[in-house]
Length: 116
Image 1 (tube, rainbow, N blue to C red):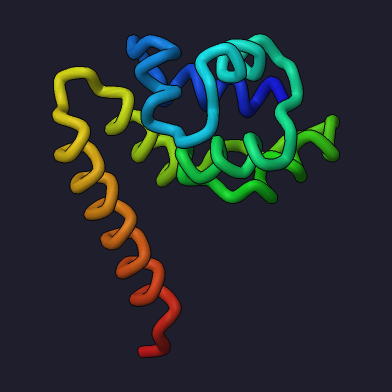
Image 2: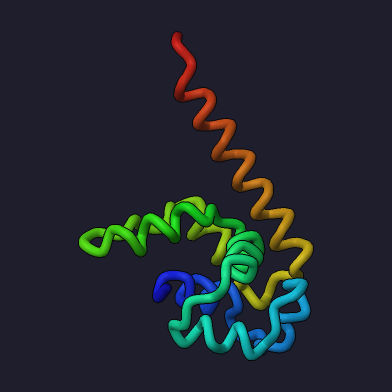
């Protein structure tokens, strides 16, 4: 769960635990603190955190099962997390930019799969 903790810290940036807890329905600031300190959350909390992080729960589960070489965060996920963590961006603008980046990546992936 170290990866989950790192992802939460990265997305949270300079925001306080209470502010983030207010964004995630049903997850308290004390629960966030425990998870950031490496404790394993219950399944409901885990799924809520994955939803907030906009990542697949499978990517975290697989990384904990494969201790030799955990999967890296994709470039797309890194870009999205950086946008959301940027304190100079309004959260609404960060989300809009993240959505645009995802759409562009999906469009590019679709074009690369087409036969010429």
